[in-house]
Image 1 (cartoon, rainbow, N blue to C red):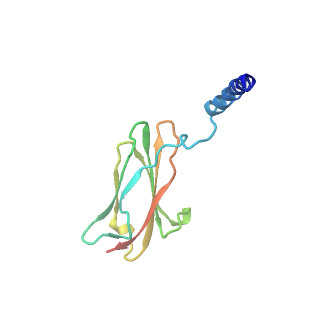
Image 2: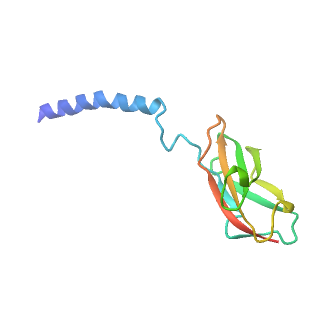
Image 3: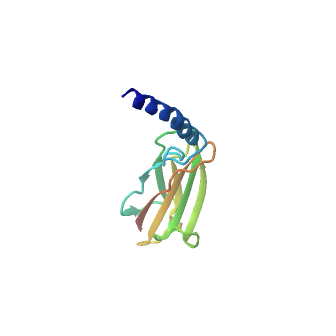
Length: 136
């Protein structure tokens, strides 16, 4: 039984430093990217612009430490590719909302907005998105 304990302890000393150095040298993990922002509005099926001059997009920063800013994009339709891009804004760390003029929207049209949280050192969170239909 004593031999096996010695073997186990020796194996741990040989394998553990390699695992630690791989982690320290930048192996990818879920901890590498910042936590995404949380979308607040519009978040659902419809957004009403009746009697409004703008649509205010709202979000919260779940962990405001080390936030460098946000990347906001608005697309026409569900397809979030360059030809459908309406606006792209890089916002500072204190931003929690952005107003987009009502003239950018058509009644009954679907729009998709995306948001990335950017850390102080430039790393970007996973993309969060929501699609909605505008009612004017």
